[in-house]
Length: 294
Image (cartoon, rainbow, N blue to C red; front, side, top):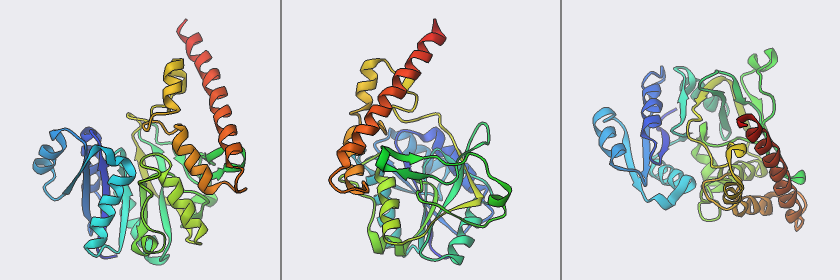
């Protein structure tokens, strides 16, 4: 595949970006350009990229672009320069030496498809996302699915999936953006934009796959505000319902449910079920957290 661009967004996370770029340098497949979208960082990213990774193209954007806007900035740059495909790679995702080559081969063999890597925990090596799906009807934006690769999965080149989660080693051909546009940075500036994009693709009959032989290692050192709800006091819990830095924020959750709820006009029911479930999970985990410290 010619004109492949890898798009990485960096929001004050150069320590992870460095590891991400070092992993890309070890890739056996070499025919790609790297774009780092530097949005709202300190001068560390600018200065160290120039010295340590001079081959990387650095794009600058404001802090209020968040993930969707920063990703779109990179996609537009790549498409304007004739990219046939892009790989979205969050800066906390580290490829193996074979990941890119595997994704490119699969993309060539399966044109007009979106193909995601298997996500593994960086420290334990255990899979954390293989084949996700939604169950919006009962208030679940995503269900993680199996956490182990079975022999049958390992022997398959591709697994058809209902949902892809995030920009974690996902190859997307330019034809997909022609059909459905870019990420919805206005309505979903940060969390939820990935779900919305892949659900829109599925509705347009664009195949979604995961690749059992392509892996990214996920470094969860920096996480969503609500990733560990038990550690939040009640004020923090309430903040997680409103902050754009939280994947639980109700503005984005409501926008996502309104766009994709299976029964039109009943999306508030899905949002209610989602919120009640999160409250119950928070109360349980908070109680366990406090009891462990007493």
